[in-house]
Image (cartoon, rainbow, N blue to C red; front, top):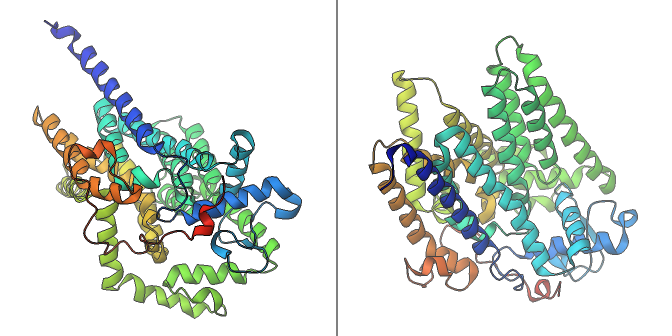
Length: 449
């Protein structure tokens, strides 16, 4: 019989074991079939960026200039007769792949496992955020399990693409920021949060929406004794400097900013032909017709269901509504956990609204993955008494059941953890999955060996 005084220690040990089990399950999912051909949904990106990394190693920076260099017959530009540079994003992804390929070899597994390494830090951020600000070790285990089992994480967590690599910087910077705001001497956490965010800005653009959110938050709600401008300036200055450096690098290589502006307009109004059309700022008004269209909004809902599953989305919505109602009724101040969820969700939502073409990629919802996992766990934490464990287990089983067919679709074969709770049949409909049915051309699957 367990002594009542030792019960908390036993429960903590069990909770830590649950967290360890989540990490083991995560690694089991993400490392499965790591060396299979790049012929899955959106894996033309993997073949392309691995080619760019190979060119860094083959030709050196004197020729690649530190940016993605594509050769004839490879990747997206397989039909062109001459090489070209892909100048739509910062170069951090291909440079990172070049470093890991130089150490571990030029294989498909190197590319996927590099992505898994970054995504593992996203999982650790979800675990840490839930543990520090929401409800201890059990909250961490639940949030981590929800994050791991969603289709978005199960497949695109090992995707060799920008948002998988930026997500850990996104989440860790947010955790450090909340830690900064809860401490009287938290300036070192703020500085570290800024540094982490700016490093993430070398990989993709979505991190800058977080930097903007943090700067606005600091400006509106500065720490006691600190002026608004002094609070917001470090974020604004560091973010603007990093953004300017990346854009300047791209423009110097391209010779002008026309291509970057053209692709921005394509992302904003969702017009695939705009990248080849003359730059026209009036095209920005196309954003209104895209975001306020029923087609875009219904696609967002369907993709959210496919990426996160309906049960998890319902739990996240319930958590949000409960928090809003409590604040309206004046039942207390926002908790650190609610602050973390809000600060994590806002930049992801801003990104989706500002770049509506992100829904052309199933992994486009990656920036809100942390917020939804935390909110789903928070919905369970709010339940009092012994019912909490039952509801948490039911939520996990519902997510597992719902996610199974979609994960089966991504992997192309029934994946063992889902086999116990659902059939191995693929979903009957691909509606709302945008370009998810796109298959990589055969040439993109030929390299690396």
